[in-house]
Length: 170
Image (cartoon, rainbow, N blue to C red):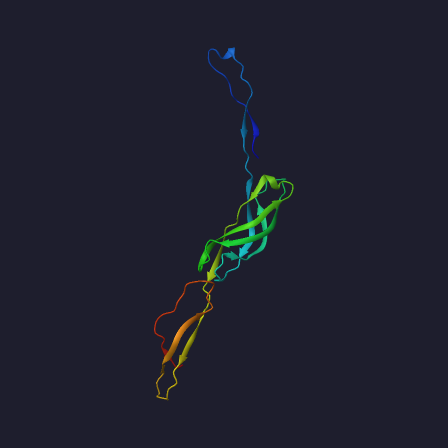
């Protein structure tokens, strides 16, 4: 907390005229910050890209770093948020929603665990294409017509498909 009084000791007056004075008690105000407790036991489930930054946090969290004889328990429901919603690996995840409860909880604070996630690319499909019917000619190529349309995009993501569609019988 703030405004904690600290008595200062160990000061000695010196000099020729020191005997003419008496040192008044000295105290100063101080602030004691809560000690950070490490959280372990939580993990992030990797997932397919969905355009959001929220991820599922699983596991049972525990704290370490309590001073001897003190008690505090981890409480709350952890919420994970990715640093970016885009595809990648080792993406940093911030965790919120955790707090401490118990007799000495006020002496401590929860340190956000260091977690990361992998977001994989979302599969999409193409519609709007068809094969031109032709007579058997022994070849494997097929003429493709139509305009390709991507199916399965997320929200308002700006993705187009380009190029010349080529067909090959398998």
